[in-house]
Amino acid sequence: MTESANPSVYAASDRATALQQLRQSLAQRPPRLLIDGVWRPALSAQTLDVDDPATGETIARIAAGDGDDIDLAVAAARRAFREGPWPRLPASRRAAALFALADAIERRLHEFALLESLDAGHSLTSIANGDLPLGLRSLRDYAGWATKIAGEVPMRSADQRGIDYFLREPIGVAAIVTPWNAPFLMVLQKLAAALAAGCTVVIKPAELAPLSALYIGELCDEVGIPAGVVNIVTGTGIAAGQALAEHPDVNLISFTGSTQVGQSIMAAAARSNLKRVVLELGGKSPVMVFADADLDKAAKAIVGEIAFKSGQYCAAGSRVYVQASVHEPLLEKMHAAMERIRIGAGYADGTDMGPMISDAQRRRAQDIIDHSLAAGARVLRGGHARSGPGYFFEPTLIADASADMRIAQEEIFAPVLCATPFADDAGLSAVAALANDSRYGLSAKLWARDIGTVHGLIGLLETGQVIVNGGGGEATLPFGGVKQSGYGRENGYVGLSAFTEIKSVRLGY
Image 1 (tube, rainbow, N blue to C red):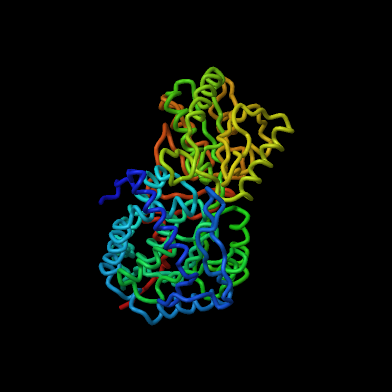
Image 2 (image 1 turned 90 degrees about the vertical axis):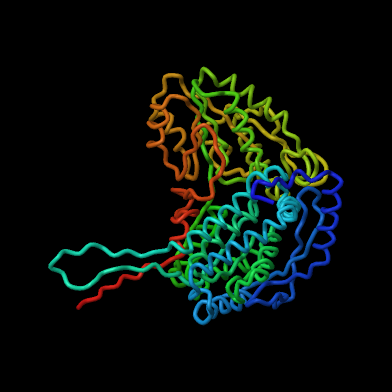
């Protein structure tokens, strides 16, 4: 099997059998934490239920770890860092372990696809074409970087005696806090960078979708990663996540999630030991479509992205600004594209878009829409939850939304687009002002053929990423945001560097 193998090619009957077996396995799985190489219950013996978003039914029970469990996990990670072999292994051996982990995951790729679909609600197609190949590529990319972490020797003048250089060393114990919208991918991206750098880790997965992290933890042990190097504590953000952020023996916390939680983590890091933070937070990404764009391609991509993960995607383009002369034609094409979306359980045959993660998230999206409609916005399609079991929401297209409405300012995290025209003669600065009218700055999408428009606009956008005329994720390109979308970057050598500390050395003679 290769990274391009598509788990959605399961025949319907085979998928039904595999899904039934997975459900049975999850129901029999004891709720445990991974601490110092041992799977054990939470000290409190408390548990949390994990639901299938497509039905609302409980599919698993996880241990509800809290501050006491975090203390044990951090202590184990600290011992493994100070006394264990991992940070002192030759880089080639750390690389080999990461390659072995990638191979072990790939051998169970179909199982991970079903697990992710059952746990997070996403369609098998989106998982197979996004999360799985990106996660494996990231893991193997960082395995390659493990042997290329290097310091530098600055130039000195001829009359200076001695040698100056600096080293890059692992930062220490890294806390990894992952979101529920991409649990498999986020765990692997952060874990791979930390392990390649020689760090030890404590992972706190999102309580709404924690199962991939637990399965990955089992494979870490299977491929021989030493005890204490990878620790996993499931639990709520308040009980376990906050304890990690405040812990005085954690050197770095890498978090992906909401801006509000990111702010609390940053404050906790400052109050405790000034631990380093890498924050990939919310987004309200603009999409700019010019008259010379390929409208068919643009409409398909814009709607496809907002349907991806049911709109629960931080970089999703949810504010669409369209040159006036093509505004109505593009609206018609986006409306038609939404009509073609097949909604259902992510693991069901033929599903394009699965459910949202929870009823609370769905109700929040409804509240934002209702508030904006009361303020004068207009629904062209959708705008409401789908009846029946599970947490489904209709793909939604909204027009006449002013810049001050909640629908245009808040990260809705649902399959909802709002479209606004801009004048045909608007200058690039005016279009950029529309795009930049947000407290977020994670990603921006641009559709235009004119190279002057493209390059002129890129430099005006306040964002960490610009995607021109489509394109998917890339595991090696730095990713992160500006403004309230956070700071720091993940992926590639830039992402790896966050898990290292620089030590300068001067040798005189």
